[in-house]
Image (cartoon, rainbow, N blue to C red; front, side, top):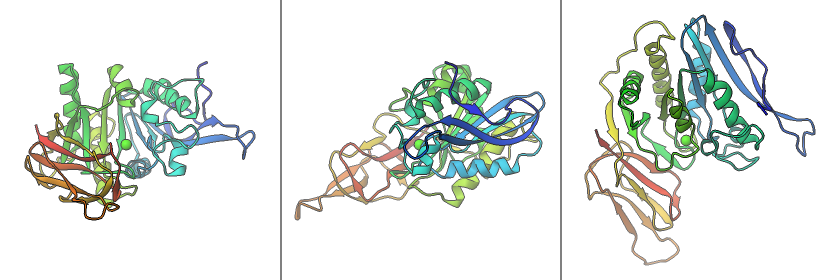
Amino acid sequence: MDTRISCTIDLDGDGFRRGFLVVPHSRDDSAWGSIRVPITVARGGPGPTVLLTAGIHGDEYEGPIALMRLADQLERVRGRVILLPTANHPAVLAATRTSPIDRLNMNRVFPGRADGTVTETLAHYVLDHLVARADAVIDLHSGGRTLDFVPSVVMHDLPDPDRHARTRVALLAFGAPLALVLTELDAAGMLDTAVEEQGRLFLSTELGGGGTARPGAIAMALRGLRNVLRHLGVLQGEPEPPERPSRLVHTPDGCFTVAAHAGMVEPLLGLGEAVAAGQPLARVHFFEDIGRAPVTYTAVRDGLLYARHFPGLVKRGDCLAVVACDL
Ligand code: CA
């Protein structure tokens, strides 16, 4: 089977169009129902195609808002921009990271399945019908309800030197204050991996989190997206240089602090603050065991506090903090 999903607009002709991906979804409250995922395309003659996605996790808001804002501003493009602001639309409707229909994390099911569940079918369509048309993909993320990040643009540490160099130029063209070269904890099933395996240019972001959106991060994302579109020749002009060059960081072994205790988190550092190895990052309090001493988690490396657990309570195995180190 090719796909069960249909698209209400032509993705290949010149012009600006808004429409929907239609995913059949027969269910208790809608017998012949469907899920309609908004999609926008702008095309102006020959040139590269850039696919912009957000909302692969349904509790992240900066990316979808930046893409909706960008769609309103896209006038003359050379080539094509495809925008999918709420890729996992059922998850966005439910304000949850995973889909309420099949409980799948869309960024762990790529390459997806044409005859799979709703999330797998959507992932398959994104890869086989949208990525397949694209020369470059930017997938906007943030921390969602459980993490918070210093707003940043992200690339993977790619083994091929030419692709690494080409991606790094695009990363710096984005012009974020912080640019991360990341080694994933668990890269299987990610859109990132699927796009990179096809040799296409891939960038991501972490734009904040906490299950909300903040103005500075959305402005940074919009400026960065326009800069990369200029860098690729889809928008006219040169990328706007940032006030100061992006600070390049990475996350070698020891940068991720995982909670070994459940309890109440006392953050000891703010996001973006400088950290020295051995410095306390957070304290976990045992609020049910009165009198028991709290446990302090310390940094293993020098750098800056890049991400932190957001909710006030932490469980064993949660990501408590991430330190990023200068490259
Ligand atoms: Ca995410």
